[in-house]
Amino acid sequence: QVQLVESGGGLVQAGGSLRLSCAASGSIRSINVMGWYRQAPGKQRERVALIISGGGTNYADSVKGRFTISRDNAKNTVFLEMNSLKPEDTAVYYCYIQQGLVSWGQGTQVTVSS
Image (cartoon, rainbow, N blue to C red; front, side, top):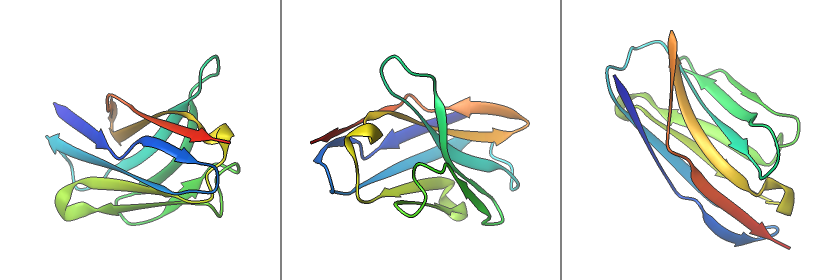
């Protein structure tokens, strides 16, 4: 069983920055994928970014050049550095870990005011 605890959400003005963190605990395999999805009100959940245990990354087109995903394998923690935030980035951000099955965090609210 895996538990994920997110932190770092909040309210920021457009153009600002936030850093999200997500710590995984429990039965963690050495090879896995961690990442972030987001869901805005009335919209489907969309993938934001992912990072594999070896360091490879992938980003949604909407966040390329503004968001950076990274991880600390020793601490089973994934980070999402979000810069140049836009009002359309407002959403609940969920972290996940995929190692066969997928486990999800509880979500953290990010609100970007115009």
